[in-house]
Image (cartoon, rainbow, N blue to C red):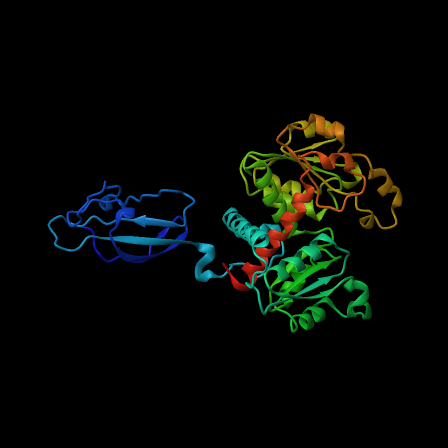
Length: 398
């Protein structure tokens, strides 16, 4: 006979909190003390579990009591709380780089983002983050990232402290160190969203601050929240993330968005990535080596038309003039070599999409905008939901 006392279970890396409940029709078991027997689905002697839905958060384990025992029929209900939600606290203190995330956390963030989409569309105003202050500290120009973060905070009831072009109009212009700026700003706010012109600046800020830091782009380094919204968009548009083919096009050497996206795509199975770029801005070896180490197939190509005909996603990027310094000649050599236009659309599969982190110059023609496969403005809107989700998770938890 199975014991009627159970300790906490640990199954599939989740944490389970058991409690005894009375039997009912939902539990579907057979017991002599019940008036209406139900089919027996679980045999405790073999420790088998009925899992009605692998995505369900609640698993129920059912105890068959001895038919000779007069004990009232009971069952054991086990709450499944994934390991990253223990204590309802988000297990990341900061968002600095794409490598922080695994598939389980990505799926959970996307689930929260879908909840945020409902809030944004159906609620006149949420108060989830009422009383919280977010500081946006941007040392480089930004439209979508800064405004979407500020919109996300306000739509959840929080307030915003902002400085645009902090490189010129903050005390950084007077020579103040990043560390001193962070120590000061954290005294005024609950979370800092920072964009900086130096790769690694976000990591330095996180090491200094006692409040959450979100990397909104650090030079040619990474842009993790953009990568999150990109993967979220791909899942929404294509319907899957495993087994997809993605063409990364444009400035791959300086593009922090494509670097971060490559890190996240490596979390999924049977993904193939094509790199299409001018020679002067090819993808750097560190990303290629990382993908190889993770078993991700990648290929460099100079033929955008051929790549577009094979891919589920054509991810176009801008050739970044600001990263070339005085080498205008190299910029002019790279600019305009790969353009997504009607000819590219004609060879793309019907289900495929064109994405772009924006802003664009001439690398996607305006005629493409009217094609349903042009996903870049939907992509930008998804950034609001992802950033709402991150702010909620970092400040108040799950």
